Amino acid sequence: MSVLRYSLMILPICHYSYEKYYQRHDEYVEREKKKVERDWRTPFDQLSESNKRWLEDFLWWPPWKFNDIVGFVEIGMDIGDCLTADIFLKRKYLPKTHPSRRSGRKKKTHDFLYYCEIHKVTVRGEDNKSYLEALKKIIREAKRIIRKRNRYFKLFIPSYEMDCMDIARAHRQLREMGLYE
Image (cartoon, rainbow, N blue to C red):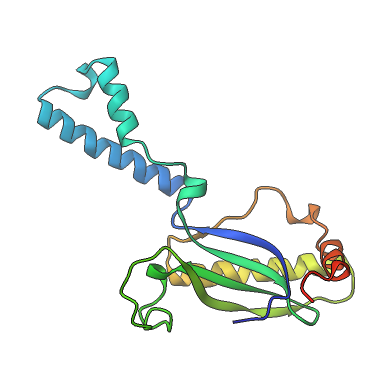
């Protein structure tokens, strides 16, 4: 496990992409509608509006963004001048050979456990551009590791460009505040 001295951001890892999640939802709804039609012997379109609404509410899945999370990538600075990251996954998504899975605990939990470290990327100087370049390398490597673990896993990246963040300033402020001393 790396030594993250200053945590700068945490990005969630989703089980599926937004599109795949809702595609799976729509497929689920269609299967359930067919079951209802078979059990009630009435086409879904001919059901009363209140029954349709009730069934659609009953078959509804929670929103993707907050309910499909299988892990996190914590990105930050180590003790030196390197940007690094740790990947955490729910226990059930860790490989069976992972030490956390072999600990003998059979109880199913929803704990997020350490999976692996992303190699450190040295930041050159106090220039925000070097921080952003290092961040892009870290994210690219995180995506590769996550994809290798499960081809459906998707690292959630904010829709805005990373260039709008001043990571050098954030790191400087964290050092000045001495929160992690």
